[in-house]
Length: 636
Image (cartoon, rainbow, N blue to C red; front, side, top):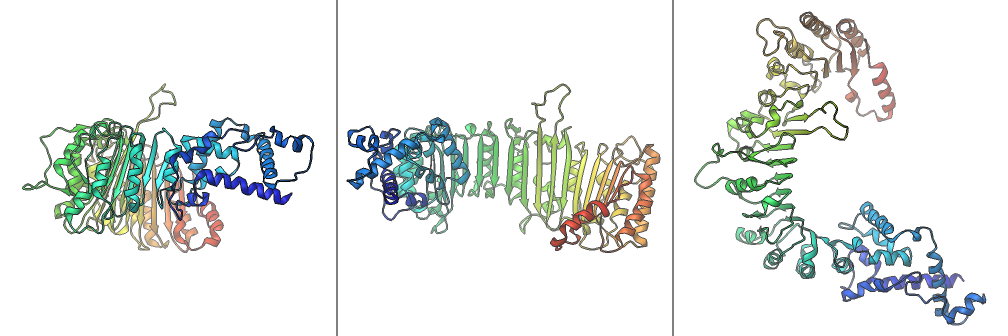
């Protein structure tokens, strides 16, 4: 009996292999020793298989009546008996609970398996194992076009041939990762080009590609194409002319009427009439894009939602230096939600921001580099080097809802992030989420020590929360009083100093900037009181040895808080948090801080820096407990 079951199981698998046209493992791995020679109709044999037997002889036939009704043992022809056993198992399988699910629901389950296990773009096609569970699952999976609508070419064309046949007339997405199979893959796709919904061409080296065949393929009309991604690089081109011929792509709205998402990597961008219909445009590592072409592209992207310009070589027009177009009115991009620019030329970012008007609700990321060819003026300007002079294209910088800022001034990197949060109006339902936006700027530079650029950018925003992280060596180069003076609405201030185990006078430096000063003190109604609305202050990175110097700093902070309290007629701080780095006498330092500062603030927290012992993983639990209890002092 065991041998008969094994024989039936082997026959079942053989039937599936024959219908697939190739070994299931070969198809799963994306490669087979011999190319498939079977016609597309051969991949659709499962369409003619009906349940519950799916091609097996029916048990009601006269040949099996004696075996089933009489209960006679399986004797005689072994193949007939094996088929009878398979038929009986198929009939029992149809009564299984999961096989009584609606076909649509079972297909949805298989689609979820595709999502979880991946579609095999860079590995085995695991979801095909579902087709080997039983005949019912095989027929359902093989005849559902939705399961075959995502096609890729990696090691061979096996899966692509099968998927193109079984997807029938459904729209499909196709990804070609192997440049050596392009000459065979493009003719295979050509009869189905009218139903391509997404096309990904990801080639590390296009030197082996027939450029005429490739450009002719893109010259065909693709009426259903919505997403096009091209990633092309050429490492072995013998000349620039060869690279230009192979990498230049032109798009028109006539050939791509439904194209909405376009990503171009490593190619030349030509003038096009398609920019207006795009919702997403990503230009990455594009070659030699002129200012005029960039201007034309940006001004025509009226419906753009996401725009990225990354590592693209910008060229000024011949005969004139790159200059801002002051006479040109800003082109609004009302639907823009995300903008990201990363280039080496500061003037390129400045040019982009002088052409378009960016909504205050958009997420903006600007990155550029200061290198040997950067002018001394741009190096000194820091973050201002990539911004237009009037900031008119960035209304988020002066928005009444831009209330949060983060400044990073490390040794090699300086960055600024402003966040805009629009509060809900009274009576508005919870389903109406607040409109938010942000702008992040970063520049790689070791030569800028001050913070004047960050101050000038964020001084017009009514900040309520400000976080500053910097290296300790920059403390003396920053005018902290000038930095804090504009922010009358500031409620929360956090300063993180990376000291490198050097004793910097952090407490005295910052509290002297917040101290009361006679005379004109800025825009505040309280003369000489920087940040009059400040209620929360957190200082991290304080190096201390609990000596007379630390006592003097804490005493100075106490006097500063008393002077602020006298002028403001209230407790100046609701919460003061000090995070110190010390290896010994921590308890003594904590008691000293409690004696001097606890009476003049609402709540005092005194922590040990959790990074003091980064190699003590075995004592993580004890360190966490110490940080939360022993190393924390809260006085109300």
